[in-house]
Image (cartoon, helix red, strand yellow):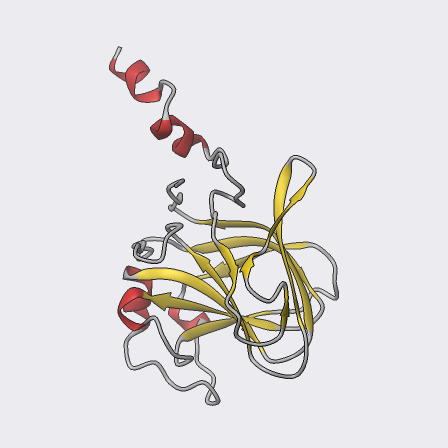
Length: 186
């Protein structure tokens, strides 16, 4: 009887089953945002577009300048997620050039001096790749600055994944599943 009540219908059951949100989302991540930093198409706002029965996030980086795309992990800016027990994330994406993903903590949100890892070009082909949260896989770029906080802080206070790149690039995201974490639908 207790098992039945815990597995019944409702938001808790939906979250455990990994269903999408009622509003546009990719793996329950509803906020894929062009920040307005760098020349992009679209220039600002949501990147989510319908692809059949699902959604994809699409953005094009233009010009040789820094571009910024934000994914809020708990679907709102003021929230954060503790990813300290997560091994990493699986991402399904395509890109025509290399890009980086920064793990930005709530306590150190602004600025470029963040822990990041390379997201390699796929030559425009859709691929699924695992990105580990092992500290040895994360670094910084001298051009953007060195983080003043340890990588463990970024994991404990994760507010967002921020994709940054300095070259023209055509990006498409079809999946982003974080080990041990299911975003809340808003």
